Amino acid sequence: MRVLKLSTFVIVILLTAFSCHKTDDGAGKGGSANLSFNLKHHGVARNLIKGTVYIKYNAQDAPANGVYDDSVKTTDADTMQVAVFSGLKNGNYYFFGIACDTSIYQHAVGGLPYIISSQANITDNLAISENGTPCN
Image (cartoon, one colour):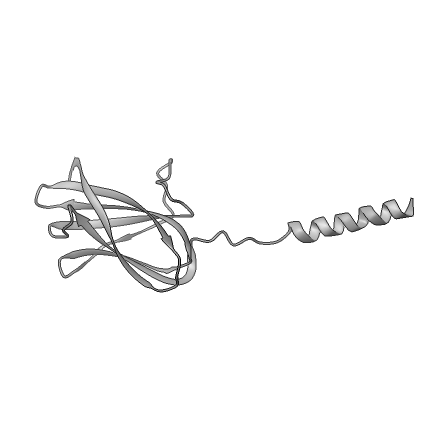
């Protein structure tokens, strides 16, 4: 009987010790990677204004509920619309961009799954395409 109680006690202690640990689920803020996206419509950046890029952590697809974790407004840099996300950790992300193309006065949108695998300054393009809705 004493062996049974001791065994039960040891099992409870082991389960408690191994089940109560914090897991690092990867993507999100708290790292030192800085990701800059250049919005491009049909491969070019001209005529784009009022851009926003949304980010979803731990995802490789657009969220079904349309809720993103954060967003940044783009800034003008040599006729480019640039969105900069700072302090990201390694992991899986999904980015969604939207801007107004003044040559056709329509919104251009597009999404991109992205994996950050190094803590560095990264620059990439985010392709967007018109979706038929007029710019405000």
